[in-house]
Image 1 (cartoon, rainbow, N blue to C red):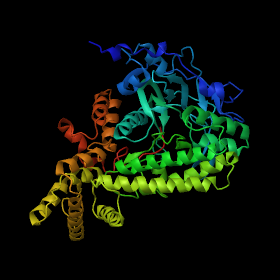
Image 2 (cartoon, rainbow, N blue to C red):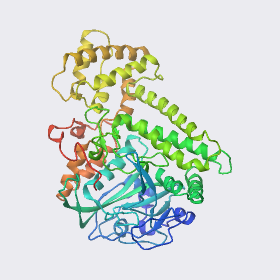
Image 3 (cartoon, rainbow, N blue to C red):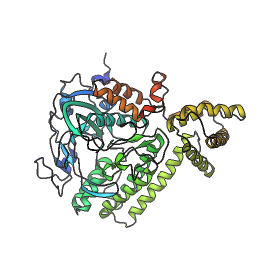
Image 4 (cartoon, rainbow, N blue to C red):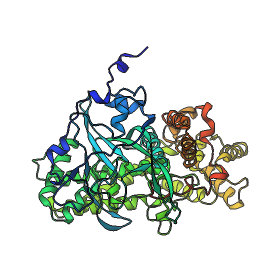
Length: 537
C-alpha cells in the first residue's frame, strides 16, 4: 500500500517547470548548436540529443521526494524518456550555461556546459527552487572538440557520490537518476593512446543552481559588466534572499558569505577524507556546494599529498592537504571577477579574511569533534591534533577506520588499557607490523589523548556516540565504486542499489554490510579506477 506522501508524487511530465534563469538573464542570440565563442550572454539555448534504448538503472527516492516526483514504473515511462533527453515537456527551455575558469592555475578562456544541459527549474511544495540538469546530454556550443556525452563508469561514480556526500553531511549537489543507453562513444581513459568504445549514460543532477565562479569570471574578463551585474543580482535575489539588493554593501557582504560557505564545504571534505581532484574555478559552486564529480577520490591511506587525478599527478595542485589553500586561491579569482561590483577596494581582502577566520574555527572544531572533545580546541589540543597527523603518516593507515575505532578505545589508566588500545586500532593499519618509532609515538599519543578525554568527564557511551556522529563507518571507497562499475558493465546494476542503501546511513553500524567498511583490498591498490582516475568521461 502506498503512503499518502507516495500518492502525492507525480510523473515528471506533469510538473510545471519554471525558467527564472533564462527569463531573467541575457541569452546567446544564435540558436544553432555549433561550437563557437559566445559573447554578451549567460547561456545558450540548446536541446538534448536523443539516445537509443534508454534504461533507468538507478533512482534516488530521497531526491524524488524533494522534487515531488514519482519513481518511474519502467523504461517506457515518460519520465525515463525525459531524463534521457529524448523528450521535452511544456515549460522546459533547455540551455547550456556559459562560463570560463582557471584550470590548474591557468586561465582557460571560455569553457561552459560542454555536455550538461539544464532542462528547467522545479519549485517544490516548500517553495524551494531546484534545477534539473542532464549530464551527458549531447553537444552544446561549449563542447569544444568533445561529443557532449558521458560514459557509464563516470556517471555511476557521480550518481553514487552525489548522494553519499549528502548523507555524510557534506554540502553538495544531488543526483536524481542514472540512465544508460545503447549508444557508444570512444574514450581514451588515461590519454595514453589506447582509446576504447564505452557505453553512454546520463545523470540527472539537481541543485538550487549550478552557477559557479567561472560564470562571473568570463563576463569580467570580456568586459561584459552589464551582464555581470545582471547575473550577480539574479543569484542574490533567487539564492541569497536575506541580502538586500539596495544595500550599498550588498555585493561585498555576499562575497563574504560565499567565502564562509566555501570554508564550511572544505572543512567537511577534510573531515571525511574526500579529495575533489579538479578544483578549477569552473568547478566551484557559488552556493558553496560540491559540484562536478570527476576524478575525485577518498583517502584510503592517510596521505595529505595524495591526489586521485592522473592529470595532476606531477604537480599535485589538488592534493588532499592543499584543498584549503586552493579554495582561497579560487575565491581570490572570484573576488577579482566581482571587483567591478564592489564599492570598497578592501572587499576582496575582507573576504579572504572571512575565509581564514571561518575555516580556522570550523576546522579546529571539526578536528576536536573527531576526537570526541566537547570543548573548542586550545593550544594543547592543537598540538595533540598535529601530533596525530604526523603519526598517521608514519605507517599506511586507513583514516576512516582509525577515527571510527578511536571511539572504542578505553580511557582508563594502566598497562592493560594501553595494550588494549593498540589492539582495537589494529584494523586501521595496512601493514601487519608496526615500526618501533610508530608504535612508540602512537602509544604515547594515546596516553595523552586518554588523559585529555578523561578531563572532560564524559560518559564513555556518550563520547562514543558523539564521535560516531562525525566519523563515518562507511564512505564511498574508490574500489567499491569500481566494483559497481564492473558489475554494471556486465549488465548487473544491483551493487549500485546496494551501495545507495548503505551510503544513506554512513554513521550507523550496519553489521550486515560490514564488508563495505573494510580497508582497501590489495588488488585495488594500483588498479585503475581504484587508485587514480583521469578527467576522461
